[in-house]
Length: 235
Image: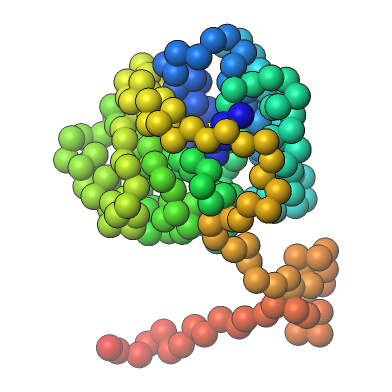
């Protein structure tokens, strides 16, 4: 079974891109399943089901969504194998710009949109920097110049990625994305012993573990203090 990981900021159009791409991949019905990872709530499984796409869902709750993803990706793979899918696509919202759920030698797609701001590519971090393919959406509501500048910013952050414009409403570009993904297909039976492309945060602080009180005496573990400087200093 092939595994494809798709991530991107909330509301960037990941679900629409995945649906349009599956429809263009030319696979037989029920050959592709989706596992949707989110934090507190999602209705996206209804969109998949409405298109006849098998879907499973996991909510991380109080856990970091990327940690939750890594803790459950093997279960997702086995779920796909059990149901006889040829391909599993995972969808996760990268809410922490410090993390990335991508796995070495597993296709990684980052979806971002033209409306997120011209400086967004510099802020996303490893989720964008370590992707194989970067899909840029919502190009129909910005100018050609804005599309080109945004794509150039993406290319500057991740010069090795294949950058593709996809319209989640019309499906324009989805055929090309599906073709690229099928070129990279890999038959796997497990992801045990595989490695992430980028490490998770290196340590925990007391607030990661549930501390609620504020103060130095409660700050244990990984702590780094801010340096604000003189606001009136002239450069």
